[in-house]
Structures are given as C-alpha cells and as structure tokens.
Picture 1: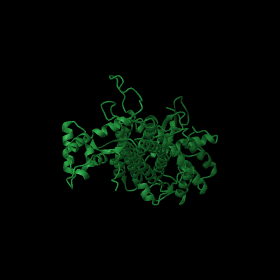
Picture 2 (picture 1 turned 90 degrees about the horizontal axis):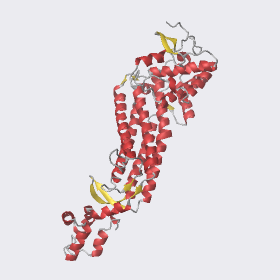
Picture 3 (picture 1 turned 90 degrees about the vertical axis):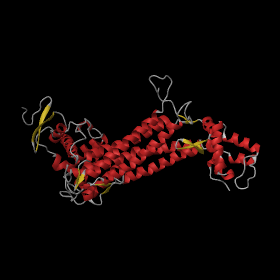
Picture 4 (picture 1 turned 120 degrees about the horizontal axis):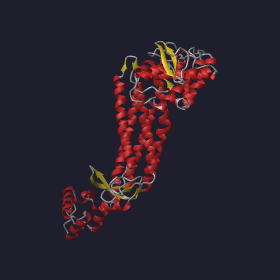
Length: 486
C-alpha cells in the first residue's frame, strides 16, 4: 500500500471526498479525473482538442472575472489565469484522458480541467503540486463561481464558434470563389441539361455551375446562422440557472472577456434557466451544418456524374488525376475527392441526428445530460466540413477543366431539342418528331430539315410551312439557354 503523499515510480495517492485514489505519479490531474478514467473505458476517445482548449479559455475568463469582481485574490487568480491559458494553447492536451462517453453533464472533464489548471498554477508559484495539501484548490479557486452545468456548455459554444469562424467559413468561401471563377470561364460552353437523369433542354456549363455557387453562398449564410445560434453563453447560471455562489455580473464579465480573447461577439445568455436546461442552440447550429452537408453532397455528386467516363460516361468535365483507382484495372482513375466529400456529408447528417436526439431526450428540468456527445458531434461536423471543403478545393476544384467537345456533341444528339419548337409547331407535333427521331436514329435537326424540304413541317397556328430561317433560329442551342426575347 502506498502511503499518503508519497510517490512510487508509477503512481501517487490523491484524495477526494470519496477517499484515496492511485494516480499516475507525474500526472497534473488528480483523483476525480482518475476515477472517471477508470469508470469510462468506453471508446478510447478523449474530448476533442478544440474543446479542451476552449475549457482553458473559459477557465481563464472565469478567473479574470472573479479577480476583477473582487471574489478571487490576485495571488490565486494570476497563476490560475496563466495555467488556464497554457491549457488553451494546447500544452496540456495529454492531461485530459477521460473518455468522451462519460457523465452526461461533462462534470468529469470540468474537474479534469480544474485539477490540471490547479496543479499547474501551484507549480507556477513554486509550490509542490504533488503535495496532498493543495495551496490552490481545484474547486474553491479554479472552479470559483462555476458549475459544470454552465461552464461545460459554455466551452462547447466557444469551441464550436471558433471552429466555424476560423475554419468553416474560410473553406466555404474559397470553394465558392473557385467555382464562381469556373462558372464565368465556362459561360459560353453549351451542354445538355438533365432532369430525372434524362436529357432536358440545353444549358450553359457556366449556368450549371452558377447554381453550385449559389448553394455555397447560401451555405455561407447558414454558417453564419449556425454561428449566431451559439453566441449566447450559459456562464453565470451555475448549477440550475439561479446563479447560486457566483457574482451577479460574473456571466456578463466572462462573455466580455471571451469576446475580447477570441474576437467573437459572445454575450451572456438572456435567460440562464433556458441556457442551463436546454441545448437548443446546439441543435439549431447542427441543423444549419446538416443543410450545408446536403449542399456539399449535391455539388460533389453532380461533379462526380459530370466527370463520369472518360469514354463511356458524360465526361463533360475533367477532374485532376489524384491516385490509381483500382487494384485490378490498370489505368483506372476515380473521382476520389467527390467521394470523400460525400462521405463527410453522410457523417454530418448522422451527427445531426445524434445532436437532435440528445437535445430532445437529454434535457430534463434544469439540465441536459448528454452534453459530451453533443460537443463531440458538433465539433466533428464542423471540422469535417471545413477540412473536406479545403481538400476539395486544393485537390479537385482548382484543376478541374471543361470538356467543351463532349458538352457540345451531346446537345445536338439530344431529343430535348424539340422543346424550342413548341411555340412554332405545337407540343403534339414536337412530341411526334422526338419519337420519330429516336426511332430513326436521326437528330432532331436532321429530321426537321427532312420534313421542311418535304413541306410537311407546319406552323401550329397558320398551317404554313416552317422556313429554314425559322427552324435555324428555333434550334439555336444558345437561345435555348435564356428566356425568350421579344
């Protein structure tokens, strides 16, 4: 048995309100963290690093607020602030070993942060962080005026808002700008449109891509709405929203400090009972991310189809070759970046289902008890969307090229060319031409010229023969890509 306060080569003994616990000898964390490590051997996946670092920011802001409000003496506040900022810088990521599938409030990870910051603060003052007698206490000093119930969701909001602001928005903007440039470059390339995967009327390749550009512009707007959904911070509500054991201005002060430190306009929650009890803001944020994922899936899938081939598909655009596509078919190259983005979208949609379920079922009365998994899912969604979008730009979109010859060749062979004849010869006559052209293997233009020369191509209203000039104008593919000009 290890005696209290002594160290072995591998473990030391720490004590909490439940008794003694063996902790790795040089760990900065203490008894409560170790209990959680032993209680939750679930996934082997700790909190996301971005959430750990947000906890550091939040703890630093809390110490500054308590100091400025006269609650925490400077001799305690200053080393706590410094230690918390070191956590925010990622210097202690390895000191957060608790599985993400833990207590539903995140209490284990909140205490993990308190213990690590407390130990480091003791060390910074020249004290012995291993000593059983803690000169800076994890609860009394580091966690002053706080509860897991308000501070852990505050950290989730901070981490998610930072990720949206710093990663997702810039990535989406880059993809939007690259596709906008392609849209302009390809605006004179005529191709066949498709509905139901069947031939439709002609469209310009640039027009088609302008639709993708608009999807990305809307995705940027949705990112900003996702950001807005989590700007309110629960800090200051403590255990149940009443603010017990904290200064009345603590929440506002913490939000102000975090806004200054991050450059993000965080504000105190308007109602702390709502902010503690519900995670509706995260649910809303995730819903916007799901809509972005749906748009990215659609764009990537359409590009995958447009690049299909190279000889037996559409082949209307050419993607850069990234890697061999088959272990058995030499020379095969696949649209791997499109497939990567589509898989990310599927994951984000699944994460949204997790977040919605956790938001709906995890909140009873004054607390939601599924916060760690919500934090994991929302941060994974943001990171995946940002990273895959960045990769798609770098390894696909920038080098993507149009295959003008393939685009224009298919227009002339399309039976949908008859659509522009409707105003001239009528719907029924145009439908008959489409069927006859398909059966005979002729193009619409070839068949119409044959009928025109035979005098059997008639105008719908007057019954007069269609002239060659009228036919040429009606079957001009470029005219078909715009509304009718009077």
